[in-house]
Length: 108
Image (cartoon, rainbow, N blue to C red; front, side, top):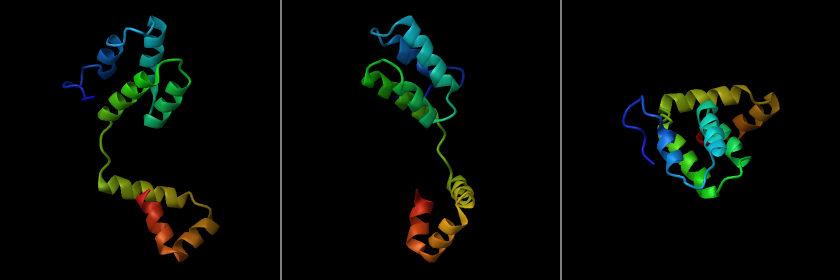
């Protein structure tokens, strides 16, 4: 799945029209879930509840993934710091005493 060539193209429209086994209601539900999902995890949750073939779910998810901007290294570090700040103080103390644990946390 490639990202649309124009920011004005609807990336999911071509995928939906290429699926002859979907009903109009399926297409409508998928389109809404695709556009209303704030991230890939939320889209996956919506798709899991839909009665459509797994191959179609995978295609839709991959299409959305191709449109998500890649996270910069600075953004990854900022996200890790934010996640660390949400840790329970006892968990943070353990992480600080075990650098390997903290390193694994930062990579995740």
